[in-house]
Image (cartoon, rainbow, N blue to C red; front, side, top):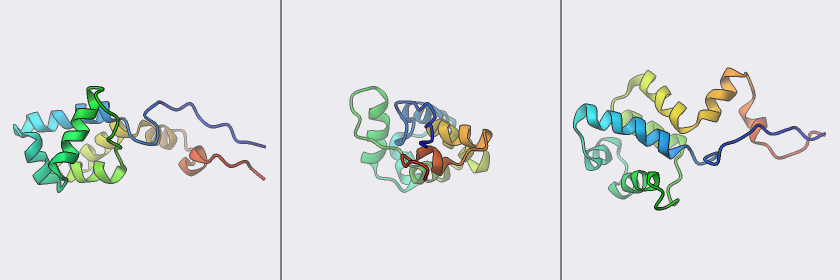
Length: 115
């Protein structure tokens, strides 16, 4: 019997860039940083940061947010544990939903049928 997959947003699997960038902009304003400052402090390239911000305004979908990128940004903006969680929740709300509902995220994303 096939397991029913949960409802998923269009941003599923590549992160919710719009919500994530909104939180990142908060940190940039807090430190009065530019995108270049963020790139230097996070260890990400300026072009990657630019693509992340560029993707938000609907001009392209070439940026795919990953949990590893969220970690780099969190470390770069000195977000701490709570800030990291906030950034992850913004980027990947389905992870938070799975944890709150005690679902196994691996089975949520599986397209295989139960045997």
